[in-house]
Image 1: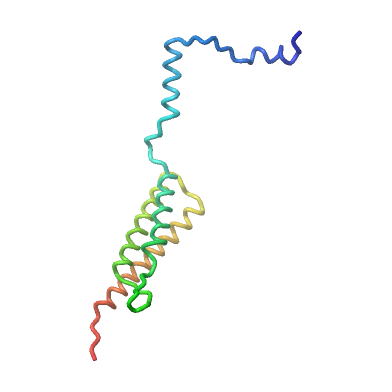
Image 2 (image 1 turned 135 degrees about the vertical axis):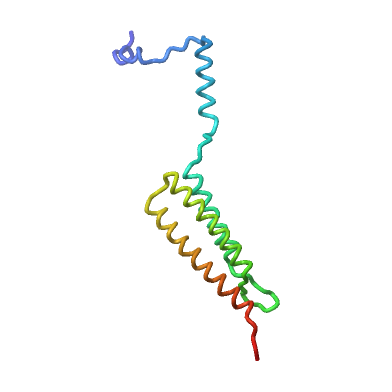
Length: 139
């Protein structure tokens, strides 16, 4: 004798007979392809992640000072500043794309503003170091 609960739930149990019609098979294949294949549309989160990756890479590698073993000092050059500036600008472009695709919150706004100020400082630093390296010292 079956319990009352099993009698109530019996209409809810799926009943698979093992046979699948051609249209049912086509539906299963179409659904599996939809789930498995990645979307082709651009995602704001993808651009956000790429922007963060570029900014982190710039900070870790290109934006650091170079060490000169001969003099034992940290040195700065226009080449390093230019590389840092280009990588930072590339990261900023990705952050702007992410904002345009819907990643717009206080965190993204603050990071974009901070990065824009950093680009301005790097451009100023590049001009200053470039000017300093091309000046002639007259004694």
